[in-house]
Image 1 (cartoon, rainbow, N blue to C red):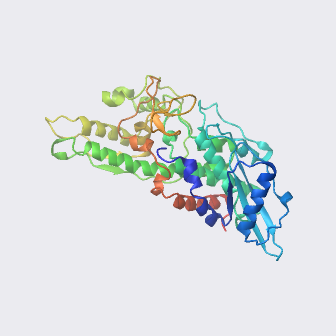
Image 2: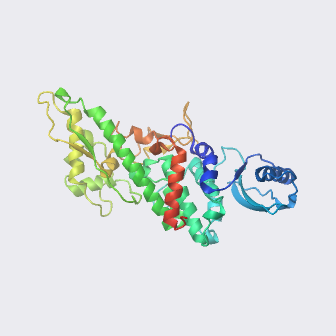
Image 3: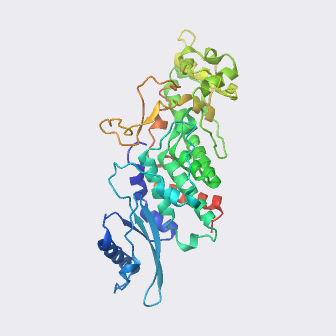
Length: 407
């Protein structure tokens, strides 16, 4: 994700969280411990509750710290009989360079039942994505009493679904479309064993995919519109698809296998397109062949970019942008990787978590440049035109519907 970090974008939404979740949130990033922490919390609580005389027993407050942060809702009864509640959002202890863990997420699950399904791919969520998911789970735990269901499992499912959707829509990681790729949100939620959470992941992936179709279509039109005599390139259309997008991680070589299943393998494509595939054998399990529409679109891309000026005509009359076409256009993992992790040097102006194309020769599908550039250069909540508050309200509404906690 380019630009502002996702954690910073989420923190900027605290006022919207308070309004949407019907709660008061006090962010504790002081680093205080012991008695100093208790005194600070009591002062903040009295101010938030409008108490002129702050006589809440200091023993009521804790100074527990957690390396990944935590949240706690505290209920109060004032001397005049009024009641109120405040949620303390305690930020992680340590510097931003400390790699976040999922210990907080595990602590929310019954019997700490969190397992990584890391047999499917060599994958490690970035610290930024883990911090963001932890933070979203902690904030959703602040929800006011009007949002609390009698079912603890329903409340947990709601929090997981909300966090998954916000991380997915906020971070905009397209790796779920790539072969041998994965995303932090799919990886984390799968480990939490939440069906509702996986529904939210699929929903966010569908929203993002539809968004990227139009970006790819615009890139195709910009690149191909003037490629033949008279500027009459093939018309580009977007095929809209609906329903949650559940995509299991694809092994390396999947795209080559789908070409083989279609017939002819990479030799069925012009060299400029077939060469985008790796030499990984295509016999990866049983895969469906590429559709005729996608093959036609690939030939259309080739024709609009490479057609001879002698004829000035394209054999294909249109390019249909579908999910399947996006899966071919985007490079495969490990060609998409996260800079700043595991000792990778950061280039000037590059933020941790930014995705860039690696320059190594690792096998994989190299994708079709430049059509995937906008997919990698995603800014926080771009699919909502950068409006994080709108994304928050959307995700909270959808998550409550999915979990059956809508009021």
